[in-house]
Image (cartoon, rainbow, N blue to C red; front, side):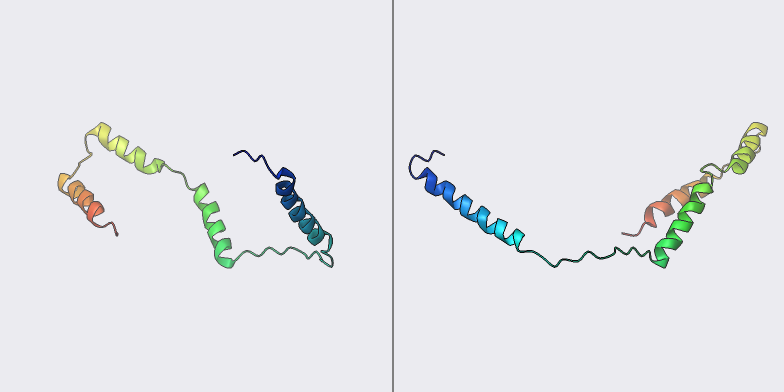
Length: 97
């Protein structure tokens, strides 16, 4: 947009607004700084403790892996297809929406 006429008048509006804002800032006084206080709820503390304990639990349960590996190698690992299918179906339909 081109403004050919009254450019000083247009820019004067902005100068007036700046002076008003400067006066407002200069007149601010009597602000006292307070101490910041942080409080953590008991629920948050319990959550933090639980999370720290969860970090110490291994992702892989080596005892179960070792037992299944031994059963597979010896041919004693029996898979019940009906139980597997039932658990899959239950996991799909048990999800709450």
